Length: 458
Ligand code: PMP
Image (cartoon, rainbow, N blue to C red; front, side):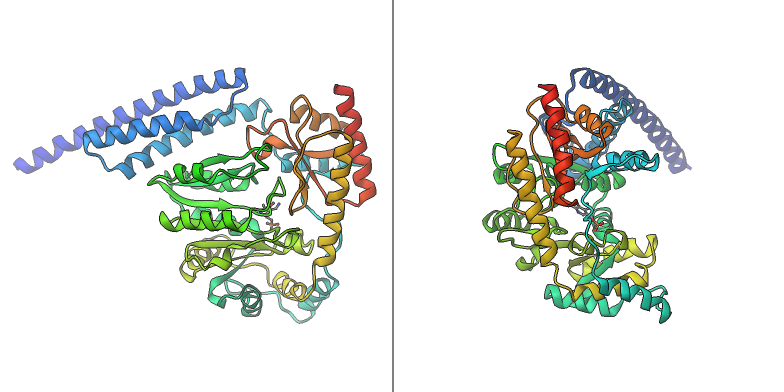
């Protein structure tokens, strides 16, 4: 009897404390909204790493004081920080201050649907054709009735061929619907709410978007044009805390074209090993590396996940075939997401990918390199500052004045689509990304329009 009364009383207290926590969280969100308004007015970034660092230090010291588990305290804080950031970012989006390359691409498509011509320099979608063998394979798949569900991890033949190409075992490979889904499965299956991943900015926006999906926190290591887009690895190590679970790498980089040297990758792998971190290496542009590039598989690190794709290598974006290479245990985690979400990649597309794999992509690589050189020469004529890309398909110049979005919108009115730099990180609003996925003549036209608009703004 006594026990029952005590249990009831404790339950009442738990309810009251929970209600109090909810009220406090609500009050915190209201304060975050007010801070967001002021940031908007002043044009300040939503994310402030210094403020976050200070508040984390406060929470850790409080956890020690009250005898709370440090990891749990940080995870709770991270959930609160993510929510505040979301509220502030939504306000910014509503005011139209945030746009990505995909947003501009969709706007451009709408304009095209009205019958106007657009020069596409905003997306990384090559204009050249996929290998004929991939097309023939598609037609054959229909004739041969090869259009069924497959193993979630991909057809044995494609996985076997990919394993040979990557020098790994076949159970270390999963075929995914594009590199994007490999990134999504890796981040959503390996990270939990409140845990952290480190992303080197400027960056393809999907890493943070995937982390947001599960309430994981993205910590940003920002790089600058002044330092040739080289990350400060001392700073990287200092960012690691008990909540950190993953570092994301993307070299050759979208949007800067940077390729990190082997020494830097060695150091990053050793940081990851020291702290037991996953290393997600997005290598979808690996073929388009114009200098020595060390892929993550060379390190044999059992917590690395290498992402690759047929999209860029063979201009097969719409086929939606990519793959990941990792330890068997990690592949099983990715397969779990894939089984729930999509069953398997479409069988005909996997056969087409297998056919393409026999083809040499070096002609595509030469084409892109030549176009990038051409874009760089035009940007030099405009006196814009940029770092000559070591790889990938983009140049990321700094504007001489003004912000990216007004320029991007003005250009769109004139039939030229380019990507705003801020889509790759809030603080890069003085940059734009130009993609080399059009013939030189088309690029020339687009860049001439860009030059004249920039001149008008002078
Ligand atoms: N990673 C990066 C860095 C990219 O730029 C892209 C596409 N733009 C992808 C992954 C995904 O490509 P896909 O899903 O078409 O393989």
